Image (cartoon, one colour):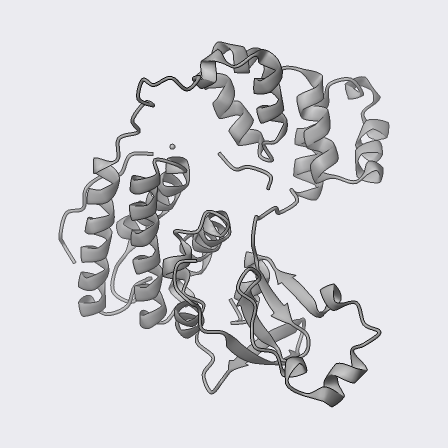
Length: 312
């Protein structure tokens, strides 16, 4: 427990399968105390670690469509819920973070997301002691070994500039193209990082259109109008309006792919893979669904909702 750990270095998200995944049939039951708590029984077990294994989160990290979803889930677990996890779930969690580090190293992308996770891991190490939050000394030694490997991978990551070739470089693009790229960023932090990267982008980021369309992406017209009505002096400052809206309503979550819940068989699955549903094998069930919108049968599950299935 007294081993020394390497210190971590502190680092963009766009709007927008390796292995065959095993699907998880779910039975959802609601129990009501002060609030409604959703619990899940998954084919005879109800642990988060088994869910992460059967949905193959470790391999899914290498799919660009799922990377941001998984990183958000890891962020929630490491920053707020680590001490509520079982030892097995903690081990699976650290293994997935190690896979994230390998993916960032190979792809040369999303290093800032890895840096955020490692910064949170550093806080875990600093405050770790017996029973808080990582449990026994043997388990703690295993976690330390994994964290050390993650540190080593992160320390070796060096973002390489693109090699010289005949293809045009980003700096050679006309401003109209650069503006279109910025208009497709869904996170204000990505815009701020872009402004620091290149003077042309810094000037474009200050344009009202960039922040107006970012407001329209995340918030409804009614929400936008409510802030403008309350602060008439800021009606033309869309960057200030955006930050007021963000603090008041929070941001819309946008992922290229999310875990889905089937209403028919209570199965969690990755949308791009699908799942063997009871409706596909039961003619009587299919007849009942003839007039039902098929897209309404699948419910997207954000990371926070996914954790609530396990009372986290």
